[in-house]
Image 1 (cartoon, rainbow, N blue to C red):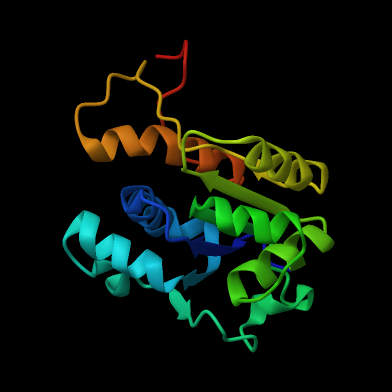
Image 2: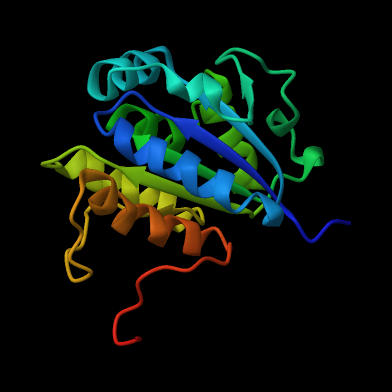
Length: 189
């Protein structure tokens, strides 16, 4: 068995395509620690990426992309042994479907597989403000073993660009995924 990570990335249609881009950049830079990256993007995610970032560069990354209805994708089954799934950004609708066990597309099926196999699911929720339904859905996913990592940037590293601001969130996500990286650490030089 390989020591390298097999990672699923779901890109939801919430605003925040910059987070997905910075995540893709980080995963590409850490490729020596990764065996496979499988990506599933919602149709809205592609539209939001094009609108917010002004391009369709997601297609240029060296990852394997799967259609939202491709249930033949390896990570639609636990037997493929993908150890981590990151949904970034994660809309409240996607969160709700995961929290209630509705696996109506590849993204939610993969999240269901990761939870049932007791592997790592990281949801980078982006919407704000949140209501009690959202909070209860976050609670349900957390109780099922998932990690809610809101796209709430920090500023103690004094980021100077929008990508650096987004990286304050994505660095936490990469740490949660178990990858080793050089990143700002509070109280360390």
